[in-house]
Length: 562
Ligand code: NOJ
Image (cartoon, rainbow, N blue to C red; front, side, top):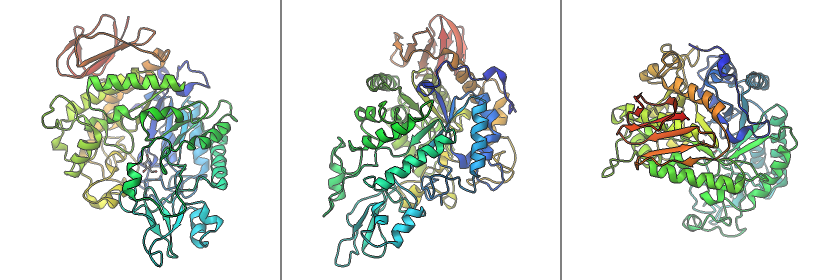
């Protein structure tokens, strides 16, 4: 297993210290499921440090760590007890510093998650709010409202949380608090100056420890405008346009918060960066990505699209246009800790009556999970072949590419986790409707054998299927055709090929084939259908599928240069 530093893949990026993020490859680590150094079945920061040679040999330019803060794990760590500490099960601040040093020593930058829309219900502020009376400054840090009915026994409104079930929970004295997500995640009141100041302290705390950037959770949710009297019904709220005036989401004044954050980012050299997770209409994304705000925003459009040449082209053109407008660069994502892995989405049976298009995550992915998530329903080889093609296309695009741990192994979703092992609140809150996101959070297989496929010395906190053995790092490391080695080669080449953030579309003569050229001649050709395709002339650099005599043999992507 290549768990040693390969000098051939030392970072060679030409981006400057100030612009590194614009076209970076960023690898998302879900720390609890990456590598377990202490043997408690939960991944930890020392586990990440031990895998720095792996990350270096993979060739990524940055890592983004999902929350590693103290948490009761009511929402996989997105329920934060203390924003300026490490969960003792994951390590200590010293472990964090050692991890950052090890990553920086090999040129890998570090992005951490900030979760500002809500704390956990164990955060000291929320405990204080519960112990304080109605109208107190402690309650003002959150969104408390009187209940309705004679003794306040009914919720202030019939609102539904994003994980299902009511969005208001009673605290026993006639008051209720708002939680847009699980009841263990009370929403903060961002009109409160103390809340704002505390997050500035958090941004400085991690920046001072050497963190290079931040991923901002639910970035569109912070500013809220709720009437003092009767609240509108959920039907009314849901029908309101998200045009900057919605009471809960994507309000215009949220950008005043990020302008303050920007001033903190600029206190550092190089300036710290940020990327917004903002589920907003595409034409409002640029505000989050502006240079006066967070600087970059996730674009999930490819993740939500069918595997289809026309859809991909429309999305790519649109997002490159948006990036140009905002002065930022765009972001590409196929998989993360919230969605069915893309190898599996692309392996699902075609929708009835639409055999040509590979299905989307939202509908088919969840339907497959709900129906039992059996691997037998999947065309695993086709899914992987499409996923490899999609990734190679992604890595040739201008902008940054966010990769999710395990996708470099071509991992499929684990669909059939026994209900008794499930952890995600989305499952518990929505029985029969949502089975949750545990299937993409199963600990990574590092070795072919062992009680947790090398994830740690002992077991793993979610069950790993037997088929993980063949997708383990050990199994793929020495196989020249493995997905791991495709990612390694692509990430390494990308560093030397990356140039100005433009592309020019090339005529392909076929609706199911996309081809584009970057300004330096780097050309990427993707075949979405099954028919072989003769590649344009040029030096073949890399391909996700076999190329015979200049012909790509069906679904795949090839990179060429003149
Ligand atoms: C988005 C995160 O990606 C997701 O995992 C989390 O459940 C919600 N935000 C709430 O924090």
